[in-house]
Image (cartoon, rainbow, N blue to C red; front, side, top):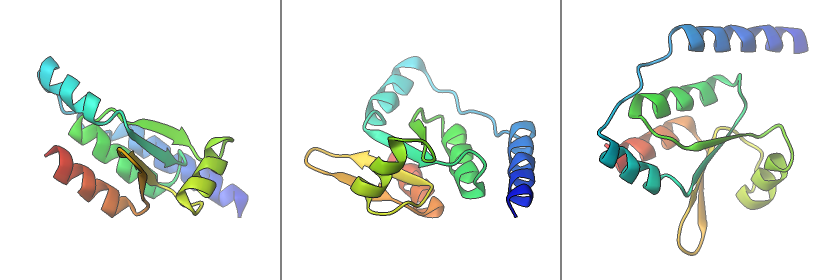
Length: 118
């Protein structure tokens, strides 16, 4: 089973590389405003997870520069589990003034980002 998952993961990464969506380009001032708005956001992911690839592709299409962290590595794994409440990826952490919000479903993450930055 490990070998099958590894091979499928590499196929997903290959096709993601070959058919990467075009990155949205904005004027420098506008991009800086969006970068400032995304500073409190973090994506927890696995590199070869198809749902994580879906979110990364949406980030690229929207031209968003959000920090991505590998949830397989410590301390990111334990942070995701202790602060977020579950070990599920993709996960978007949005840090607010008093608390953090954790979004776990790829469609929910993409919809949130599209509504916020469209």
